[in-house]
Image 1 (cartoon, rainbow, N blue to C red):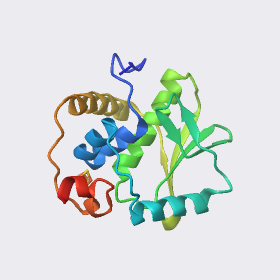
Image 2: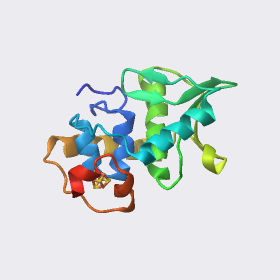
Image 3: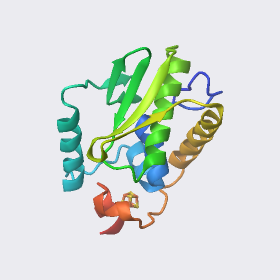
Image 4: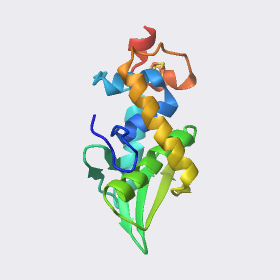
Length: 174
Ligand code: SF4
């Protein structure tokens, strides 16, 4: 893994890894080891459709260094970075994914004057996310922790409500 400047030697991770860290360590490990399940679950399909239909007019994905893939950006008085999600049940995961994007854009790419937004089209809700020192400290710890998890053996699955819609369901439970 390469290192991120501004994160004192911490490895570079992908935005989705930050998201999965908060959702499920087993999922994080599978994803980080390039283990994929081919068949897309109906819920994942539905989520993608909803995502595409709701935002088809505004968006082009912003992809940076194969680590960041923000759903769309808008230039206003600042650069708005948007992530689109179908429900807010995993809000902390969504928030830290976006904090990582803002951190990366600012400290690795030198882009200032940023605002982050999580859009929930089905809920007609938008949450603003900004960078603060406390979150950056936690982000550093999360990145360190992710590195430790993926260097170790696969974490044992723990049953939770999202397992039913997880692409790795068969791998964990069948
Ligand atoms: S099925 Fe459940 S335990 Fe397994 S990876 Fe998915 S969320 Fe994690």
